[in-house]
Length: 125
Image 1 (tube, one colour):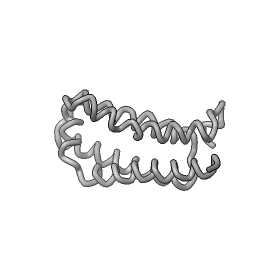
Image 2 (cartoon, rainbow, N blue to C red):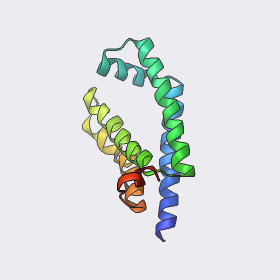
Image 3 (cartoon, one colour):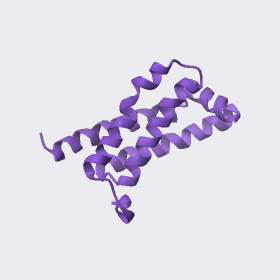
């Protein structure tokens, strides 16, 4: 297997992850609404609206990664994946819920590293 094949597999995996999560967000997954409210103090209605916007952003990330993986978007995907995994223990779920989601940040980070750590304007290529 070469670098190009590995990148294609990771692009599909990251896009699938973000598309899957976007569907749950757009559906207003109750558990996620509660977590947003718990972490931010926002009302359930505001949390639901924020979750909907997050769902739209996740679709955009999925499409960019699948069609043209821009490095800054891959960095965002890795950071967002790490944060959303970390949310679980922050709201009282077991630490293993974070560990189980290591691929959520590891796959976009691996793709970013395979594409080469950027310098300057290369973040936007």
